[in-house]
Length: 235
Image 1: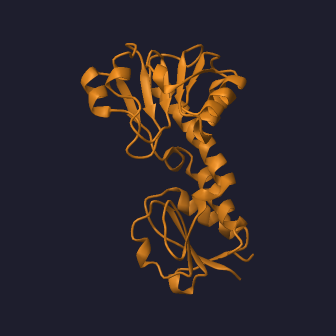
Image 2 (image 1 turned 180 degrees about the vertical axis):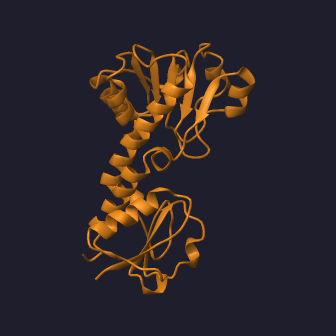
């Protein structure tokens, strides 16, 4: 029987991933030296101390490490859990309703596309800012207004950034409405000048790792499914 070891850490997805793996017939062991593989979270600490033959983790490189975040199905599921969490933060963080509000999506990768689909239930006033003309064309065909970064501004009620490098800076921040809420979903260092936003009093939220924080069971099961799909795991 295939055995695995659960690496302890702060990622709330891992216990749920381990539970899912057990329910599919894999055996959880308490000694990593007896494990065929180990399961860790995203950006785990101390992974180099693990002696398991194979380590499944997120955003980590190593000779015996398999990065489950590279699995396309996992990435799609994770994008929707991120989008759902971002909408939750938007509703809680603003005095405005999303219904009929103006929304800007910065970038048009998986997360923005998931946001676009979910937000369309609340408003038709959605704009996508993307550098790639193919992405802008796709956004337009999906019903959004599409602009390039030369025309980027912050005159919107809600702004969701997914670009992981500075794109919303002083020029853009000075155009914010009084009620604008900016949610930065991008990985570090993010895309918003938080220092200048703070100086201007702009309502901003840094919201990374939402699936682990807000929907750890569903996100953990997505991790487990990505592991089970991998040819290194013999069921």
